[in-house]
Length: 149
Length: 220
Image (cartoon, rainbow over all chains, first blue to last red):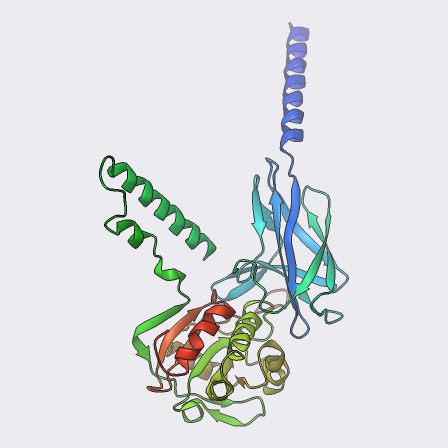
């Protein structure tokens, strides 16, 4: 009795694990970065914009950003004229995290040089679940806004 | 705004769907213009012309040279754009100034000279006259006027234009959080009243299209 219960349990567990694994591999976050850019900065700080597209069935979070341009890259949420640093930003399952002008953005503090239009800025995005993604942000004119075309 | 647009589109779609559902066998939906009404979103226009314009605030602040600047006196009879923002702002403030700068350059030279663009800091503690003198020409144009002063005066001036700003606050980690206004107010050279509002979504093209009218005090 005891043994049967155990094996039944084991089978159930194996099944659950199998399902879980299958579910997992089918739905792990699958991230791709799109539309990245940096408007040519004014002064000693810069903003960065991009979209993280998640085609996986599991949500992820952007937790930090590193760059050779700045030792202090913050994630910012922007609302009603106020921006606030946050510790992470959600990348929804089968959805996207959109960092766009006037909204959430990356903020590069105490930048080490003044990148000019046409140059590129390297960044590495770190996530809660997914592997880091390296992106190059082309520097665009100050008024650049891909949402207005 | 993105969200709003999507909602508007969804609503328009829903309206179209329900209209076509109702219109079985009848005239094509919209023959009476009803669909056109739904799908003509007034919010797509960058400018909002005010039914009740604002009086120009009686503001005396300090300009980028460190001298007193009397807003009413200096901008009297001139087309004027006013924006409240701060220089430690990586996105919207320099974007707004750059957008106006790009559009202004498309005006005839005489109109460029008449148009007054005034940037009032919402973060006077960090934005000294010297800081503004450094930032404003880069973010906008050397012709732009940058003003600083004590916060309550600035806040009162903003409030007279329906713009709510709060003083900068220091977070627990020592980071300073400031806020900017979300609108540019255009003042007519004819009445010296603030009669048009521009939202954060206003593009350089929107400004370029409207400024020739603003410099004449006409409705965009």
